[in-house]
Length: 78
Picture 1: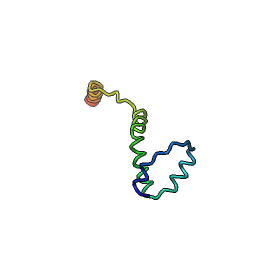
Picture 2 (picture 1 turned 180 degrees about the vertical axis):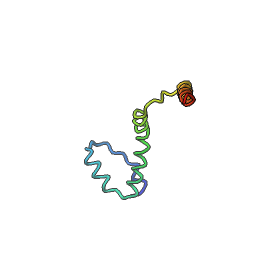
Picture 3 (picture 1 turned 90 degrees about the horizontal axis):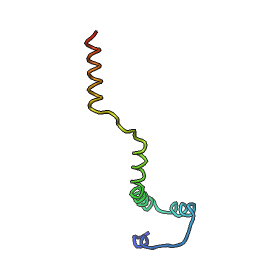
Picture 4 (picture 1 turned 30 degrees about the vertical axis):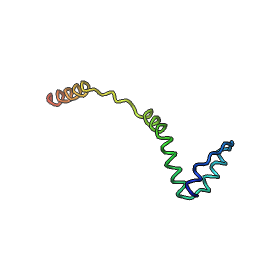
């Protein structure tokens, strides 16, 4: 498939299964190119989902210093 064929625009409805069948007929090179394009398209979506999974860090320097002080106090009591 030459690069000129990528500039064509089609305006007819088709199902996901039909699109998948078409993609399966692509060469490996075209599939890799499509994969890269899809990665660009979905990057912000995947980043948002990852951000939702990450718990917010509630540690503050004051919490850390209090924990260290408590540990040292207990250690020194022994």
